[in-house]
Amino acid sequence: MSSTVYIALAIAIAAAATFLLRVLPFLVFGENRKTPELILYMGRVLPYAVMAMLVVYCLKGVSFALPAGWLPYAIACAVVAA
Image 1 (cartoon, rainbow, N blue to C red):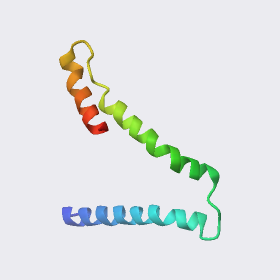
Image 2 (tube, rainbow, N blue to C red):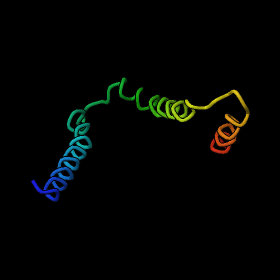
Image 3 (tube, rainbow, N blue to C red):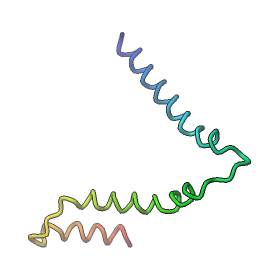
Image 4 (spheres, rainbow, N blue to C red):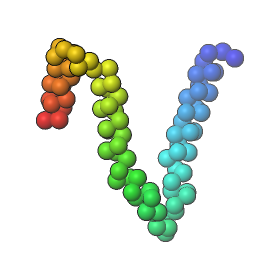
């Protein structure tokens, strides 16, 4: 299989998977059906949880032994929070 065909197949599969994932909630929940409370709860809570995980992940390698190890990160976090 040539690399062009392989790349075209990979793009087609990625596009089909993306389309399916975008359409699936509408097929499962439909128009007239009420959204379950669990899904509504997750929609309210998960964005904050993901942001907290990203902050922890980004700061996992910070060394608190010397100010030079944590001060630039603290300044960057303060600037982002402001």
